Each structure stands twice: as structure tokens, then as C-alpha cells.
View 1 (cartoon, rainbow, N blue to C red):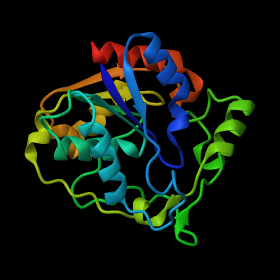
View 2 (cartoon, helix red, strand yellow):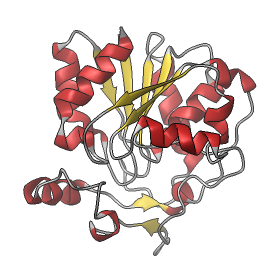
View 3 (cartoon, one colour):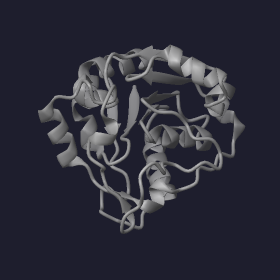
Amino acid sequence: MDLILIPGMWLTGSAWDDTADALRRLGHRPTSLTLPGLADGRADATLDDQLSAALEAVDAADRPLVVGHSAASSLAWLIADRRPDAVARIALVGGFPAADGETYFDVFPVQDGVVPFPGWEPFEGPDTADLDTATRDRLAAETVPVPGGVATGVVRLTDERRYDVPVTLVCPEFSPEDVKGWIADGDLPELDRARDVSYVDLDSGHWPMASCAAALAQALADLAR
């Protein structure tokens, strides 16, 4: 099966290398995206630019499983909105879809037009408990500042057929029960309206492609089947 792997904030497609290799060994065809603004250093790239690039990859694939990590869960959900008939499933790894009108990722400030990686201190705890020093150093060295126009872009959802697209929450540093509680509390309105929601419990931190790539690949391969 074709899989489109979309990295989260500050990451390029290389973050998926080990997961993609494992997926190929399992017989699948992964494509790892490096999005505009990270691939070319364009500080003026926008969320629409990134969505256009992701849609181009989807359009070139055969009814793919679209995987979004962290903030890119919203990008994956935008794909479901724009291509509800072209994707087999959306998998959200460690993240959730923003609702219409919400900002893509405004957690950290824009500095000189970009949002630089803030270091590991804001993520101490369950997010990084499974990352050793060498892995942290490697990931940090590979990060790229994200254009401010991406981070502060406004999510626009237009097609309610997105709620018919099956969506799976891959739960690393939180549990499926946590997510179900957040949905019940009204914190995740897009998932509350989705008609086919499933869960995978993955024992890892926020970056499973770095800490347990084989387990993540197996989980995604199981979804592809």
C-alpha cells in the first residue's frame, strides 16, 4: 500500500527514514515528505504551500494511508477535507486535528519570520522519556526552523465528507483512554464528529519514529492491511 508520511514541526522527511525502511521490508510503499519552507529554506512559505505539496503527493499515490505526526495531524486532516475520496485512512501520530478557524501551531513565538526549535526543555516528561542523549542530539541537529506563515496559518475546513474518512489515533505519550476523555469533554470537536475513529496504543514518547521505528512501522502496516 502507498503511505504518505508527513513530519511534524521542525522535521524533514529524513525523520521517517527508519520507519520508511521498515515499511518497505513489510511490503509497502512509503513516501516521506519534506515540506516547503523546510526543504528549500523559504521563510515565506505558508500553510497553503505545505498543503499543496502534500496534496500533490497524495494525487500521485494510489489511495494512500496518510500519516501525520504531531502538528502535521492537522495537515493530514486538511488532506481528508480536500481529498475525502482519494485517501484510504488518516493516521494521526501524537497529535490531533485543528478545527476550522484555528491556528495551525502557535505554541512558540515567531522570531525573525520563523519558529526555531526551542530545545528539549519544553518537552521534558512523557514526551521525551524514551529518548536517550544521542537520539536527542541527532534529532535536534536535524531540525529546521518553521516559517511563521506555516505556524500561524489558519486551518480552513470546507467539506464535511472528511468525517467519513476513517481516522486512527496512534497514541504514544498519551493513551487511547486519554483521547476518548478529551473527545467526551469537547476538546477535540473534529474527532467527535468523525464516524470511524480507532486507536493504537504505542508505548513511546512523542517521537516514536526516532525511539521505536520498527514498532511504529508495524502499527502502520497493520492499518494498511
